[in-house]
Image (cartoon, rainbow, N blue to C red):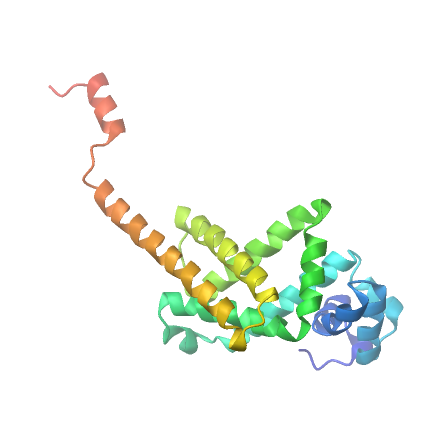
Length: 221
């Protein structure tokens, strides 16, 4: 969070300062101008100026809140903390951290997902889900640039999304149901990654269809 006085903030700085404050009011008032005005009042800026920071309305407020969670996640997981964890533990802890950040505003998240679930917001929702998965993988140390880059993020998008839905209705002690569900999903992912590695290793010894066809066309002398 910047130390600049609210009155001196640019619109981007104002958006960053308001983003974590809006959910507390969206719980009661929804993701609209009233919640934004309440957050602006806390910060000491006029509601009209706050609206200028979010020309996209509710979806842009939600986007900014998710971005604030990403920023908090990056601060909470410096390289030395990540390095001490195994890959599956990294993903598990990152997902649980994101949920813990949203925990005080569970109803606000439920309302946010309802807005993002509207057909007209589908592309933006997909973009935000992909961004969350990408940032988690990058923090976890993933440097893949091939097909694995995309497959890992697609899979984590599904894991994170389904775990969030379970978490929203989880009333178990210490959210044990959510943790167990997440552990199972990550276990499935790890099994899939193991299978992919075995398949790639085995493919080195499989006959190549392209080489076979090439030999038919250009037989060896």
